[in-house]
Image 1 (tube, each protein chain N blue to C red):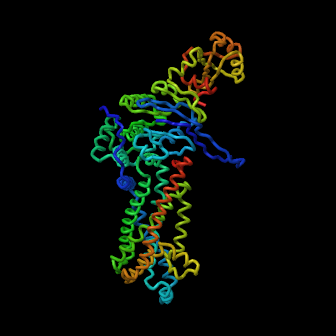
Image 2 (image 1 turned 120 degrees about the horizontal axis):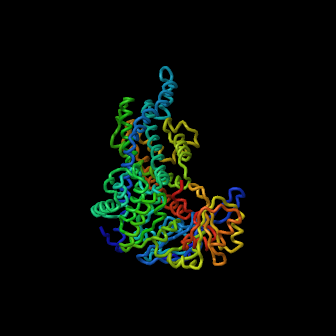
Image 3 (image 1 turned 90 degrees about the vertical axis):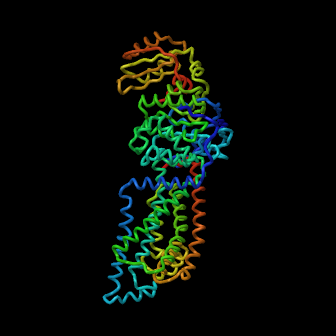
Amino acid sequence: MELDQVRKVFPRRDPQTRRQSELVAVDDVSFDIARGEIFGLLGPNGAGKTTTIKIISTLLRPTSGTVRVASIDVTKRPTEALRHLGTVLTGERSVYWKLTGRENLEYFAALYGIPARLARQRIDSLLERFSLGARADERVERYSTGMRQRICLAKALLAEPQILILDEPTAGLDPQAARNMRELIQEIKGEGRTVLLTTHYMEEADQLCDRVAIIDRGKIIVLDSPGRLKGLLKDRQVINLELGNWEQPWQAELVAVGASSVDVHFDDAARLYRLSLHLNGKLSMGETVTRLIDLGAQLQNFTLSSPSLEDVFIHLTGKSLRE
Amino acid sequence: MAVMAQATGSARPSLLRAAFAVVGRGLKINLRYSTWFLPYLVWPVVAPFGYVFTSRALSGPNNEALQSFARLSGTTDFTMFVIIGTTFWFWFNMMLWDLGGSFRLEQMRGTIESNFLAPVPKAFMALGAFVQSALFGTTTVCLSCLTVYLVWGLRFTGSVLGLVVVVLASIPSIYGVGLIFGSLVLLAKEVNALIFFVRGVMTIFCGAAYPVAALPGWMQAVSRVLPLTYSIDGVRVIAAGGNLGDVLPHLRFLGISGVLLLVLGFASFEVIRLHLLKTGTLGQY
């Protein structure tokens, strides 16, 4: 798959001033994905991940630039390009809830032109593989969220595509279901397929992807393997602190004495402020803790960790994936 | 079980097979709503009531007003006259909700994008919706005629062949309008107001409940360009004892308008589809 300077601009009208403007959702995005690779598109909500996915899967026309799937231009020959793609979109409503799991797969098999006998064999195989065999003849409306996501994945694999596109495949799933989904994705890679997935879960990108492109505000900020991306911060420690209180002016204070970035959010469940500080060598861990106590922070706990992909994102953009 | 990840893609998909898959899917889903059929049995019986009893009240104690009605309509059997018109109006109305709403329903279900991801020309959705709606609508209108017979005691004594020919000739124009309408609904993201507008126009101009001859001159001119006018009048001519020769002008108009409207219908779907892909609003409702 090759994307070359893909750009998507949406016209906008300000509701108050009524003035026309433009929203650049995808801004000159270029990357190649090699056969057999799991490629991740990592970024916060609104970064342009889904817009990019929709352009690749022919659901959206780019303003400019080219996308090639199996050497086929998706804008000029969309129907042909789709023969090489299987896509799982966000959300669980891309199948018919009033049909059974099996009926859904039979319907989409007909759309994909799979001969009836072969379709039956593939459907039986996929239903067993995704542990849906026992409930294949129940309506999808009675399935759990995880089951619906699995039937969507089965639908995408019906035509045995070379390339699988997964848009936030574990969104909305409980931790066990999410782990099962990730294992399935790794199995699919093991079959020799190419996978493009979008996610805003950095641990998912870290675990699954051979390479990750971090995208923010429509632009690719950096692209490399998770290991090399984390290596960008190899000289920087990350100190994670749990505080009972927090004052906004402390952020500027910490940056002023040498912290390269400060990310703080309130944990509702634990009733704690969680602080992640990137130390760039100018400030030691001891100095950091002492400074916070001097400022009046109620320190509950602190740990040191190696940089994660989210830390890389914070380092490059100055904000967290949660914002 | 290991699956070979070859560069096979799928077999070449067939537009017709995909369209018939849409029909099969639609029928299965409809049948799973257990009360779906009730309006189609009740409404054709209920709809004529107001017109028929108003006509009886206005016809005078010795039905003297019927002669005036006969001069305009060609018949004194106003009950059959009204029921033919309202049955066709009902069929048209059902088509608007069915075909017009089907694309919007796909948007609301969240399945329209899944369908568009299939490697088959997207006209399959329009073709499938047309076939499903035509089959479903024609069948339920036939059932409605049965209930009309049972409740009103009316019997169609005209040529059954003539009736069937006029009904079949009406299908392309009725559903061509439906495809245009359904495509506009995809764009407008709203169906109720559009249906009320289109249905209202047809109610006024097509002579469902009164002779077109009773309308002012300019309104009669509008009636003469609407295919539904010819469908309703054609069946009335047959019901009054006419033969196929008597409805040749009707069939000619319905044939030409049917072809034009179907072509326009599929073209509208394609133009609007491309617009939705450009604006990114395909899945929005």
